Length: 404
Image 1 (cartoon, rainbow, N blue to C red):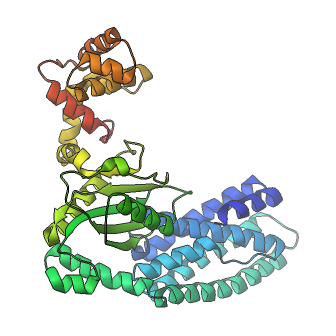
Image 2: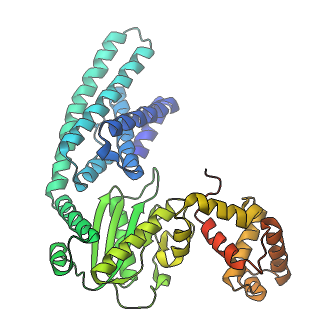
Image 3: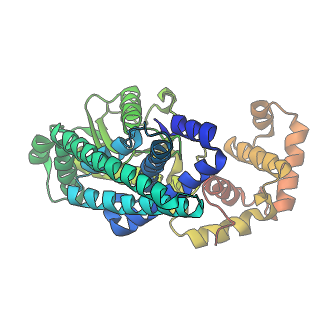
């Protein structure tokens, strides 16, 4: 990636104000591009990718105008256009986006020259326009070449064809052998569905990282055959054929990169299992997007979150339930968090004081005190309503009760 290096160059030569200006211009141009061509940024991950591409281009523009030696095209811009090709977008839309972004960027450069109140403003403005227009001509050519190269190398065309077949399978329009033939993947075996996406901001994982991480996870879970399809910037739908077992061996999960989140469905037989496991993975994805990653591993299984998914189906009711059941135990100060974690462990251990004390490596009397304190804070008895409290603590991992 080049944003970091270019940002350092801009700061070292022109100062922090120039960097902030470039970021502002890039963000405004990205917003105009999405407003003009909505298909390019249909979700937050797509918008982040476009914003990174345009900010990197503005930074290069600053260096180009200041020193005349930088190439306007960046790796971030190339990555964005490759994503457009993989998503099956038309180049006419991409070309329109280039023109909209170019106009916005050049307008800001001209305004900056005018605001500088230079003794030779007209001459400098003419120079800047000449430099940028020539650079954008080369930029547009490079972007077009990158787009068609990605499209013609087979990945984009294959992914587009596969996703259409997959959507037919998921909708029930295509069944069994015919779909297996089209996909080159056996649908008559036990299926495990996965949804993965890049969850970072500026340090977001690349498409290749997400795909590699999913492949490693499927292998660790015992998948023999796999099907991976990119569905946007840093996003993948995947399936694997897994051996028969009562439960997945979740202990075998490999280390997941910090900026990758993965939702895993439950295994199911045949085409019906293909659909059901994917639907479960999507349900986990929706739950995870409500809040920060709760387990710290990057992988969340439907079998561990089914209750929370059901309870979170109606967010307003879920928040009311949390407030009524946990009361002041929802506070986020360190002491209350400690009590809440102890009660979660206590309920996980079947309300055993001894097991809780051993697991947390604290005194049994400390557990007893925290149990009593939790009842005071929540206003709910852990002896008569322990199931409700346990469910509320599970749900609280995902639901922000401060949201309206």
